[in-house]
Image 1: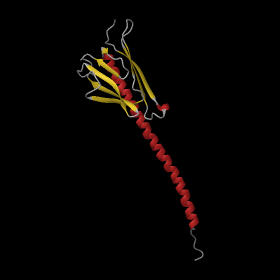
Image 2: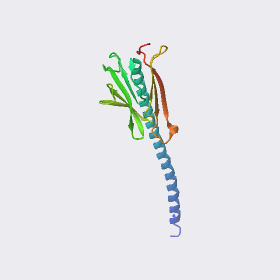
Image 3: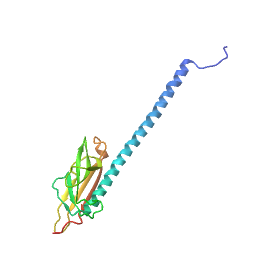
Image 4: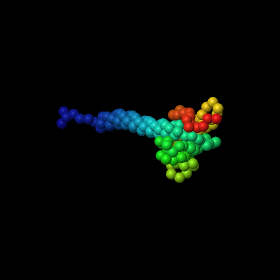
Length: 174
């Protein structure tokens, strides 16, 4: 019996502790990587939605003949019925609405931010995203749009900002 070898309880416990530390480190790395990928995908989706919303707003702004706004949160666009994105509507309104700690960009058919609308972008950090410049003898009317997107407002270094100046090609010249 004395020739039979084996492991003592102390050796077995030591191996189990070392294995637990190694497995814990590997699990932490995998969870951290998975969370980073989810965060990156969510930020990418929010940025893509903002780009698509700005593109749609740009198409409608180029086609619009009139913008009647003095506020920075709402832009009603008067459009000819032949505009492809208007779908027969003569007016479309873009506005921002509060959503918890951030804002959303909405598009409504009609002259006000009410009724049936569609959320085009979310996670905006500002509500006043529009600036309107009326037409002058030397230039057409212009709508400036700034879309700051950030999923985590407590981390301002993660803000993704889209800026565009949209010229209303159908506005009247003075």
